[in-house]
Image (cartoon, rainbow, N blue to C red):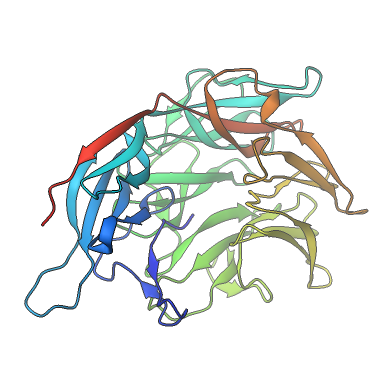
Length: 382
């Protein structure tokens, strides 16, 4: 996923451009810059920056064009905790923010009990994907963002990547021999990698300067579909691309502009993909080459296919406190709610995200907890 970036535009809506032009970007979401806010009188602009397991607050003077003055952002605070919600005091001499150590755990939906129950205890998992034979599971951990694989019951866990490479969204090859994933080191853009089942050195399949990820194998294992995003100032075509595995040749998928997070249906007939704006899920019929709208909403998550290719499951992450999980029928386009946040029995839950399906089509989610507190930072700016 693309790292967070900040942009600037005039009050009239013209001149859109990146705010931090000479800035080393994060590798992938959730790294990046966000949460900007002005101090009183508009003399300084504060923003939050996150890299890996640390976060910081930076200050930037309002007048960045005065000759002979270095108005580059300056770091004024850093912490090993995650921090959010910068709120300056009215007098501009103090800023308040929430900070805490995020904790995650995996849960799996039990349809009989109609509850999310713990899955892979002890694994602070984020992204999950199961092998076709249902014997193995690949998952990434947070906040380290390392890739692991284990038996489906959690036994025989093996760490496949180091902490120097942030890994996201694993996808098993149909033969179970390798795992594709999105990843990037600190300061580098996200790329598509592949690593053997037994481990080894991750092999990059894509190259900078593009931001690429969201890889998904074709059911026959002969191709990978992935998303490409263009960094500011880089020419090219954003959208979905298909890579032929043996030759590594890639081609653009017509009509996929503005789409990401694509997933192949198990029967090879369709591709489902989420818009980068999170407002829609589109369906591509690979026999006719036609795209159609499958679902719409706010903050739609990754499309997940049922094993029989009859349904696509998805979550509306920004769909209110329930953050509901739905499934849509490919044949009738009927949408039905499957689960929601109220079915997570644990306390102190600040959110959850469905990131995979178990072999029986049960949603698997990463649950977020935080022991956050409110802090005040006194400012001494010129």
